[in-house]
Image (cartoon, rainbow, N blue to C red; front, side, top):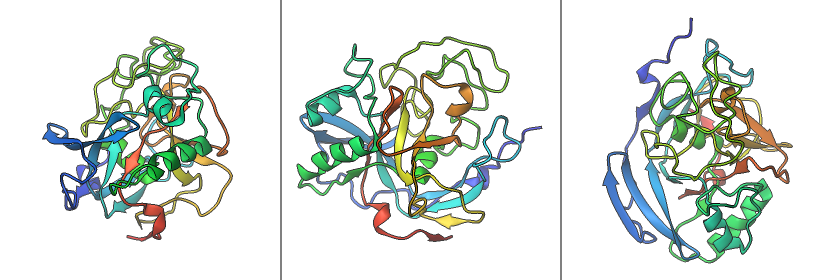
Length: 286
């Protein structure tokens, strides 16, 4: 029988950012989900949520239904907090930066941008950062940062529990998770705030679009690690979160996939992270 991970799996370190508000913030505050700041990108505002440093169990326990073999559970410590966009990057934001919209589902500018490769994302980020002089570095999150933020202090299969329905996330309801009831298959993306956020104020970390991460896809370590940044080289970049096109299994917090950096598909997008660049340092043992 599946057993939930124990609450002590996650222990927060110093929960506060080093400077609040930051020089780049055009609005800021604190609500039930935590600290937030808004930055301006190409004339549009993007809200970023503070993700505090902490420790958690990454991957899935062997008892988790429908887990993949490459999800070896291991302890991860993130020694520095970071900022993460509360939503996936919208088509409106991408259009403002890149002067084009590659997406298939273009009926609403608040739909997530999709059909973007990892290399496309780097080009977009380079353009954003080249135009900034306020100290904010925008990037893709590492895979460890992404899962930590997705779990948001929870220890269940999903941030909202161990079961999944199409009333909670956008996926192919013809293929439910763990023998659950079938649901709606919308066959498209939805606006980025369509469902309620997770406990840290992040919208649709489960489903809608896969989100590129900074890392190369590789095997997990067997022991504890500190500030991991993935493999040093590889053929595929990490994708997380599952999408409208996928089965329920793919939306689990621990689920991972990857494709070559030039790959594009109508279910793949991105989410911006902000702060220091973790890949400038070296991951170590916790």
